[in-house]
Image (cartoon, rainbow, N blue to C red; front, side, top):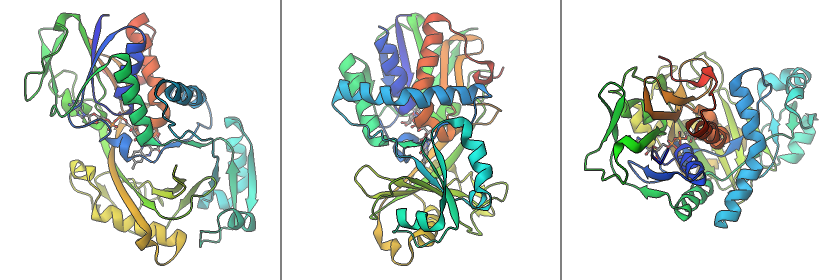
Length: 388
Ligand SMILES: Cc1cc2nc3c(=O)[nH]c(=O)nc-3n(C[C@H](O)[C@H](O)[C@H](O)COP(=O)(O)OP(=O)(O)OC[C@H]3O[C@@H](n4cnc5c(N)ncnc54)[C@H](O)[C@@H]3O)c2cc1C
């Protein structure tokens, strides 16, 4: 394999490009907007390991969890950028946990690391900024956070330094079928690709828009659902750990009517992030409209997150919001993890998308898995393959 075109400059496309270049392949990365304007830049940087390893997706998440420290070190060595990887641990004060902390301890036992039950007084001492008074909770050792924007910048610099050709602002690029098994790339302008098409493979890593980019290629469409999400930054001292909690907002429940889970996240600059709302178009009668609009922060998202912040930090918190981000998670709608591997019947076309809420955690590990398969023919678990 001499050359590859990667479509999409989020964490998945950038890690694919870096991995391919590291194995001696000529790589062009084509981005319809700017690098770091998709879901990756909107995300809040939580890395959570899985609680078991019974399915290929959980095995992949375990591998990803263990490979992140080395990945962060490598990026720092290559670019001098600290991507903010910190094994900060988490505090869980979700309702379910407070009702029966010991049951949650048993569930978490297999994920490794220390898990301890905290009393309400201990939690209030650790989190004096919080106005809530939980009765109990858990402290888990195995959680980490990164800085998504620093990660994107480090990946961009690493790619450029190794010779990846990055081109931005190209507008949406479409993949069209050519003959019985070939493909052709079409854009709003001549793409002027460096390598002739017969020597080239294409990796579709365009996040939630991967489905529309390959709409003309059977067996389209990819089973992918856009799930908008938003987060706010607060001028509130960072908690020592990630904090996970529920809020009973009657207008904001998930599709099954459950209370949404939110997280309070220590930001790299010592302040806080609060997220991550999960809207899938309609939620409990609240119409979030066309998911494309959710690339921009919405009024509804702001309202939801202000209510969440009020329940955590009390009155006046709305004046301490310093940033508001929105993005669209690519959720694979068939059972299993992300969509990875060769497009059925089109050996030139490969896919790496559908990472939903865990793209930061598993993006780098999936890049290694897909590149192994492209170069050595290593099999990708059936569960991740594009269904025929
Ligand atoms: C609010 C929020 C919080 C989140 N928090 C976390 C978290 O804490 N931890 C975690 O692991 N995950 C989190 N996620 C999920 C995570 O962000 C995603 O799983 C991950 O970023 C997906 O990466 P990606 O590269 O596939 O997509 P993206 O980052 O969206 O990148 C896709 C890129 O492709 C480009 N593109 C689109 N169409 C085309 C085309 N036709 N041709 C060329 N380029 C194209 C886009 O412009 C974009 O730059 C969060 C997501 C959101 C929205």
